[in-house]
Image 1 (tube, one colour):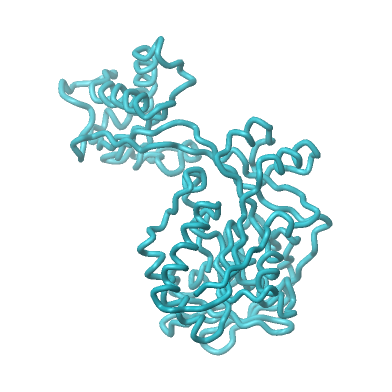
Image 2: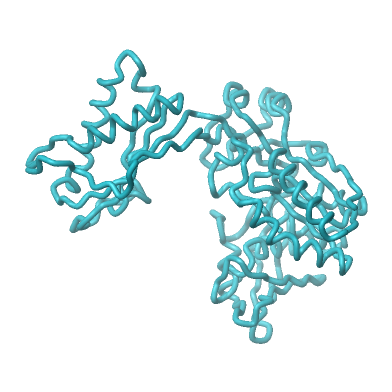
Length: 420
């Protein structure tokens, strides 16, 4: 089970909170845990609790123990934390063993020290160590998605390239099938020179196109993807229909890295957020939203002079219907939309200040003058009262980098517990 992701952003890592409710985790996990114990099967869960840091790991462990006690289950459990000490990262930085991951910035010591938590994304080796130690249930912190599914086949002697590619397909379930489904099961079967994937649900089927397409999921290069252990080369892959619902994949191979790497993720606090949501229906306002936004920023900065410097807070308009999703990447639609949904977002050093910035921005935007303005009432329509929502702390990824390591196992110590 892949239990987490960075898709929801840095908040959950920084705050130590899960983006899935405990009640839903119990609902999903209980039948699976009972079934694997009954049938003597291994269960591997990676990126516990959503972000895979110690608070997330501990939260999932508490639920596992609770389910085990309620159902009188007994099993050996491995626990693999993924937290990386600050000094370990700083030592690697000084030794020039850290590089940006994708478009990330060059890392500085201050950014490392500012993080509330840093995790490393483990590959399959710590998971194999857990299985070798006799664990039936493995609960791991931050983990590469493919490794969760590839660990046992690799441990049992199957080809690592095939196993990792199969794991890449399996990690999103039946998103690799048609009709696609995010919450349905895909079954993978591996052999010495190929693997097959097939949906468990008879209403779905895999096709060569659907499986090949998912091989490209979240990847910049169609010919390969990277894991801590090296590059999985897909350039010679073949996708073949087997029966009505399964696809056979061959040709994947792992090109081992000269030196393994671990992706680091670290989140740091950067203020507090308050937002308001409003609707805009006036075509003149829609046409001049950029001008209004600039005027609002200037007015807020003037009102806060002596309290907050302009660089200590931010105000932005998120304009759904114009460019709320793509921002400046695309030109405004022609003709302009009939109405726009507007989110005004304020960030400041404290919640009290964020609330104050937002109230100033909201009231200013409501009555801001612009050329051609005819209304003597407000520019905005508010769907809620109260209109302002305090969002709490805001985090950003300060560390999103690759660290070269001599021994990936050393970062991820495996502990064991006899449950029940």
